[in-house]
Length: 165
Image (cartoon, rainbow, N blue to C red; front, side, top):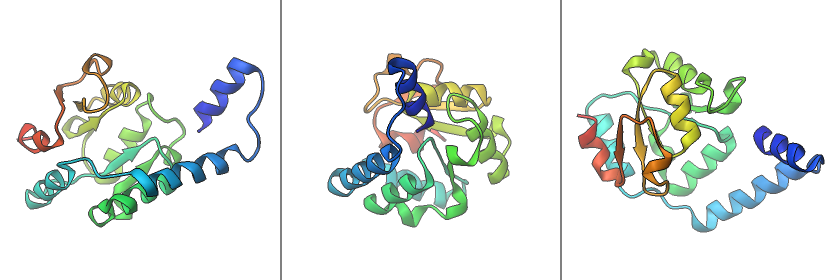
């Protein structure tokens, strides 16, 4: 959200209202409740990671509350212990800085060069590359050409488990 505030102030010279974040999040969470669905194939990937004993986590630019609401709404909350969920709130700089991914790797006890990041945003790709991690670009909603620098591209989450072999 700090990027939104900075962007608006740079462009308009005006600051957003004090209650902007609360109103914005209330609207986003209401939209989540109405419309958010899990990505097709995501549960299969999680099942495979668990079966293979591969540690995994979420490292998101969203707030912890936003991540929790999203997971709860989609039914994915059962797959993520609280200690496996990392937010840009946990670090000083969010994406495209590598801080969030490096923090998540450290907390998970995995060296950055042994991590694979699944990303669908250009800023996230830049952050993962800067962290020295392999990046798999998910193209279902982001055109492949916007995800330059990735290790691998894929458009169907069901493909991911096989790509990670």
